[in-house]
Length: 360
Image (cartoon, rainbow, N blue to C red):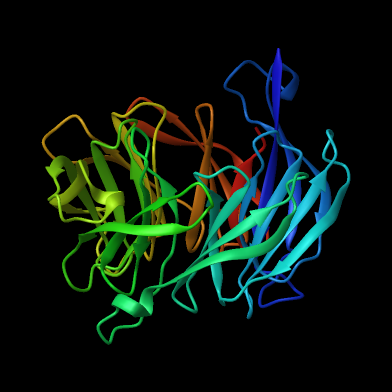
């Protein structure tokens, strides 16, 4: 029996600043019909492409009918693409220019019908309203990290909903802090706290566990993985209404190198594996993917495998790990089994690929 998945690959494009097509849809098939028993090398079919300038991050709608892309342009643009069930056809149905620039990440809002966008270039976080068809129609809120930059250059890099809480986390690589927000019923974002990191850390992405008891943060500038532990905090009666009662606070309790290789390491993406016991992190410089065990007091590297140059992002599909090697112009296809990483198939050619998303 075979299984297949539709993968959206975004990247720096020939119509922008790279070598790729913009967006490309790929069908990955694994199992008996892929040429062998379960665990055999998967096969790849190339489907639709959409020429867009530098879609640096992509996100599927919950029902998989729309693919959202944030364009790393000035101004930032959010594009909605309607994709057919078989992935053979894709049509742009929405294209919204935002207020900020250099958009690098987008995520679903806590409030229904919204998307949240991190603008690396302008140092802002924007809230986009979607219409009833899921198409982006207007910017309804902008939070400017310059308001709390203290003379530094802010660079928000990701927006993450923290499970088990109402909080949204935004790592800011330029300010060495993770900002915590809540989104109200109208979609407006309100700052509720922050997690400070040591100067020069450069927090880029983070991975919460299933209840956000621990947050694992990839620090691009220091090459370290920081782990922040959660504790409840009673706020004062004079605190703003949004903060009354029991608030949440995290503090960094450990920082460990993400790679066992020598040399500089600009970390990129980080994710928990299929349980809370293992952590994956991509290393640019060593150009490896590391597997860390979380069963000890602090994370420990248990496996590390070479991938293509400049692994910017990765995603998981069952026991497979697909790694977007931006400067290697390829997607590495790896397999994780317990505490090991191995090559599952030949790399998939993908010029300037920057991000990957599996259709739900």
